Amino acid sequence: MYLIIVGGGKIGRDLVETASGEPNNIVVIESEEKKAKAISRDFDVSVLNADATSKEVLNEAGADRADALIATTSEDSVNLIVAFLGKELGIGELISVINDRGHRNIFFEIGVRVTQNLTRQTAQYLYNAVREPKIEQFINLAGGAQIFKIAVIEESYLAGERVGNPDEEDPFPPSLSLIAVEREDETIEIEGGEGIEIKAGDSLTFFSQKRASDRLLRHLRST
Image (tube, rainbow, N blue to C red; front, side, top):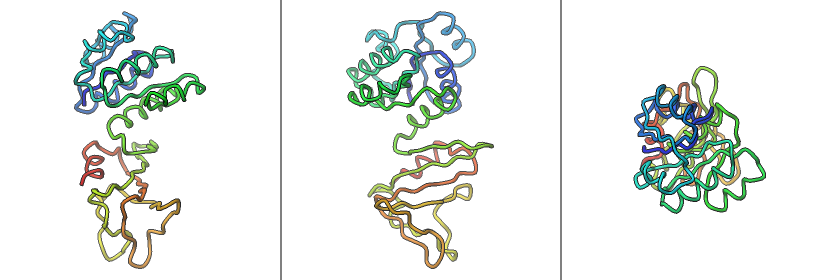
């Protein structure tokens, strides 16, 4: 993915560290020279020491080929302007930290996904939101384990698969366990008898013994 990250503070640094562990192209825009130099020194990413509330700067950062723009500054007004400019420039995924919950609706109105500023947890949420926007509710557990939820679409290979039958192997890798199936606001019993058939529209909650890789998440979303 091609990511533009605005802000080189605590959240921005944590996000760069998280995202640089995968094969991503990352450009960081940071207005403070000291922070910009520190990120350039500590990470193998491109850094612009500039004001991201400028369309010219976003264009210089590669807005025309960016998959996502992520605003992480401590100023909601800056994050909002950056997100608005990103929308004007046609960037598909717009994600922002908010520092005041009262500003959520303003961001929602222009199609920006938001999370409240919770430092390290925030960085992990932001990256998960970018790499797989259709996968919801990531919870990170001790030792690298994760819990996450995925919605089954009509074209998914999972639609029509049977799970929970002790005589048949579930269609998931050994490190992944299906722990809940929700259908029309009802939780379906998985274990026992012949199991159940997964249907389009179901929400599946998984437990992963280790961090779910991009490849695995793409596989779960594939047709």
